[in-house]
Image (tube, rainbow, N blue to C red; front, side):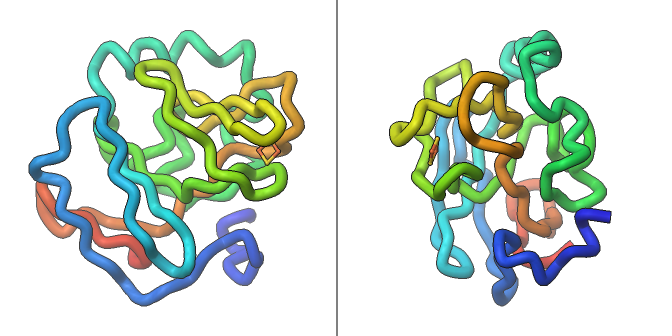
Length: 149
Ligand code: FES
């Protein structure tokens, strides 16, 4: 139902943009401007995916029921492909830009909300929802297109 709220102002809309990810190494965050926001692409390692699975009890919305993402990303990795995480790099509290903490997640510098490497928010901070995930698809193994599903 949330996905149908496509006019939600938190949900950025923009012309499709192709992002090359072939040379993106594990653990490196790529940030690309799109629709007036910063779109993040992070390649996660197998170990980081194992860590994700152990977070659930500490998360506010582990199944992403109250968070915005395309249907194909409503899974525990919040992604189409497990190794590639795509999200809007904006804290769901008041819009600051969280910072990658390598191997662990993202921390917001403004009021200390924390997210895991699937953009799922931890309990205990003021952010009310997981990071927003935009529509995207893979054109091929090394290119994704943001703004299209
Ligand atoms: Fe991120 Fe407040 S804006 S915690």
